[in-house]
Image (cartoon, rainbow, N blue to C red):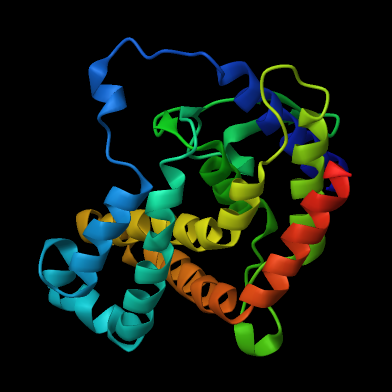
Length: 242
């Protein structure tokens, strides 16, 4: 519901604000591979050089998407250098409705921190936007892609919640600029997890196929809607800066 969506965006902002200054006790956490590392690995997998894409069933499944996947991954990897200018914080990295506890249209709990790591809050936000605004269904019937009303509401609420915070500010100009590419990267992040699951859990291939198709369609939609998304992000974020 709309109140649940607003609450989820506010809580994500609070979570990020609370994470400022957190120092992990384990060096392993600091050395975890993150989005650009995972995308580079996915690129090699798509080429069939390493990993699960050497599996014949996976190759047959994604063969028609191979060229587009490679192009989208290469474009998403252009975030690597500008991301180096942004500070890392502790992020959830799996913030979606199924990992929240709601009561009376409000988020009262966040759980499942298995994927938590040090990373970029704008990437965590990108993942949340993919999860909360994603539309499921057949693209030919006008479904699929992102619900832009939900997208705008979540983004606007997240930014607004940080205006009054003392530790973390609303999205910076560089984060606003990177957000469209990071949305594509977040979708690829989810897709890689689904493809890995497809290999290790043969008994769940039917369910995995549904998810993979969803994110493949979303990848194409994001690629086709770049200009529209950039405009919506700029309008939403810049209006709040003023």
